[in-house]
Length: 136
Image 1 (cartoon, rainbow, N blue to C red):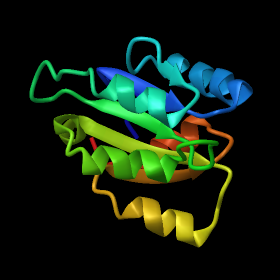
Image 2: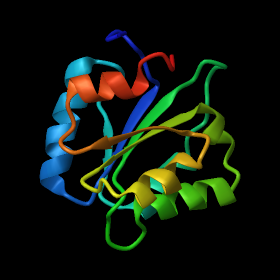
Image 3: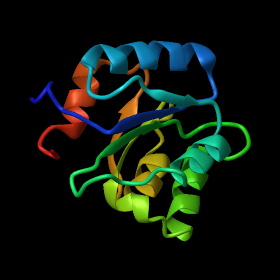
Image 4: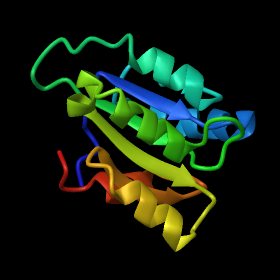
């Protein structure tokens, strides 16, 4: 497993500040990018994603996205990005990170081409590496 991956940006989306603090620490320790960008809701995450401009053909964004959030949940975030046909989706790799292990959630999230994994909380380096192993 490659622990020397590089991403142009890593985005964490979760409504829980404690979870974000922990996940940010795990991600930043890997040194895969500049410090992770953290959003507490789907709306702010989508607004940010719409501002990103790829700078090269190998531009990569990793997003860790919670499913169960008030307002716009993670599945609605995925649907909104797909419906908007955002060009950035060609560079976006999403790992669903959630406390839900419901089969229906796994099935719904896996229908999106840019979702590459599904992890149950809590996040760990090992879980994340297993989710993305062989994809880069």
